[in-house]
Image (cartoon, rainbow, N blue to C red; front, side, top):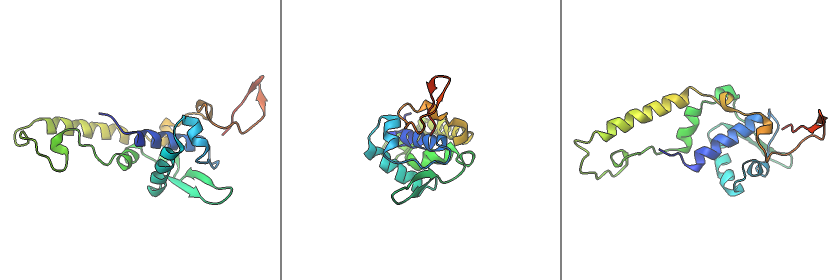
Length: 155
């Protein structure tokens, strides 16, 4: 089973937004943090905003912030928003034409696997998986302060 890049980018963008601690992030800085296309992240940002997981503040000094507290965002709710189709085998898909559908045991096995996968995701919130800001290597350096001779990045 493999999730699409949409789920990957959505998770990373939510983690990045949460690690910013309420600071507005821009759609320009996120691609640098992940080294991915701005075009891809814009669509993901729109999906997360439509889903209520992020808020878009318009205007010159606008940006993106979380739409809910990190501990209120369950990963098990985010993934189905970005992965609308878990048709792992043909018999799960619309227009199934498998000749084995009536006697196939794959659907039950893979159905159980999907339930287990979803159950695991439901146990985690964004607060559980959010890294510290320094973990985003491409993140903007928003301070010139030094601590112990080393520059500290705060986002």
